[in-house]
Image (cartoon, rainbow, N blue to C red; front, side, top):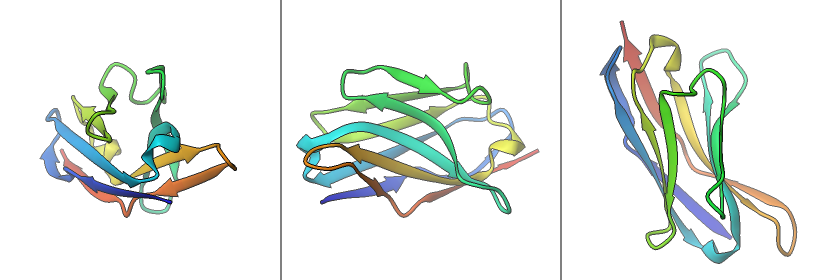
Length: 118
């Protein structure tokens, strides 16, 4: 089992920055990939960015060049640095952990709200 707790969301003006944190606990040695998803009102949850255990990263086109995902394995924490925020970035942001051994499982945090005002 893996437990994830997000923090760092809140209100921000357009053009501003926020850093989200995701603290993992439990069977953290089994985590392969950590990711951030978001869900805006009335929309489906979408992948924002992910980082592999080897440090490879991937971003949604909508956030490339503005968001940076990172991972501190010593602290079992993943981060999402969000710069140049836009009103369309408003959503609940969820941390996600992918475990593949002994079976494929995905774990989710409770979510943290980001509200970007124009």
